[in-house]
Length: 548
Image (tube, rainbow, N blue to C red; front, side, top):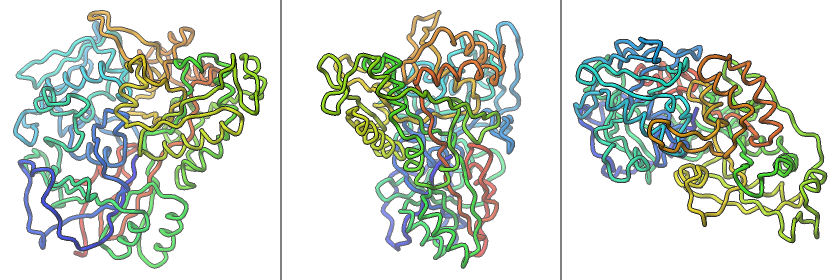
């Protein structure tokens, strides 16, 4: 789920909004505001929930409040139709497999444009064609989308049955504003939300100052939000806790470390508050990429993983906070999700034996072959934690075993959209190891197919489909993956066949699931952890403020 933090409670006259007021918002005099202020870790740009580069607590929070979805998540993790957007959604034909969505006539964006079939088409086209997107496998099964009744009836045709179709078309984007916008998909929601279709809209999005103000969207066609506005403020963990102590913040959502856990425990002895762990749908994962020439040999990949102290990586990456208890021992299913089964199978062979068998020898403590030292490039998205910290520790641990490493941190859009997608230029530096998020958007079979499925091409257009981030493809398990995606095989049965291969092939090493800590004061009413992976902000429309 994601980490939210508080800006220190200084009384500074705010600058003018960096984002213009969105049509449909109620502007309320400050002295009469009914608001809840939530402390967050970061509000940096990049808010497209469909890209790996933009995964964060704030992205989840904003998308849950501002963007419409065909389905939401129940408290037990099952999908439910969102009747704020749809009248109905059902399988209407078995051959070809067709799902029909009927959109409410009054559902519209905050600029008055109707939510319609073009929004479904835009998301489908981008998810099947763009690199660096989250779990695209389900979208790649779609062969056509037809519009009926002025765009309010959407018929989605699949090439094969897809039982996980309810996980699709969450967080729809305003196609009429984005499809021809400068910068295209890469710039979509980079710095703002051009329109809203939820209970709130953006009033101010000030990244340098670290503040996002959301105000009630009066053009939302359903029951209005109880609050006038929700404010997200960035601060250090210490300042966030101080803001809770003073009452300047009424809640906080942060990726707490061990020190913060202690400080919040101390605060709880003098202040009435509640805390809860909020797991994100995000597992910190190491990829040893067979697509990289130096790691094409499985013995070298196995040696790399065996040279790592996994326990230490988990401890450092989680900072001994809530994530430390969410160690991930499945390649596909996050630890807190129903169906999780530990399947960790380490390779017992010593590092020296594996590298020797692969043709390497030690020279002055450094492994080399044909006179060239084994030097690996280790990549992580720049400025994004815990990925940079884990990558730096991987570099240090490998060096202790005589494997040199170069640390490469690049902007997330470049790393996921080019460097790891197979679309980089031929003179680009190959990435051997990547520390990345593995994100579960609801359908774990789509996670399996997206992360480990073979590269294919659209039969009707010849459009190439980006490979998975590791470049891994094993034809011996591909039929199992395909059967699971189409519902011919239970996910549990598919994982029983596939996971042993994945561990043996040493392509991916999951470490831990990222989790935030939610802290709530009594003044903030109805603030809960939310449905699994939906985040606390998903329920902000029902929040109330007491004791102003």
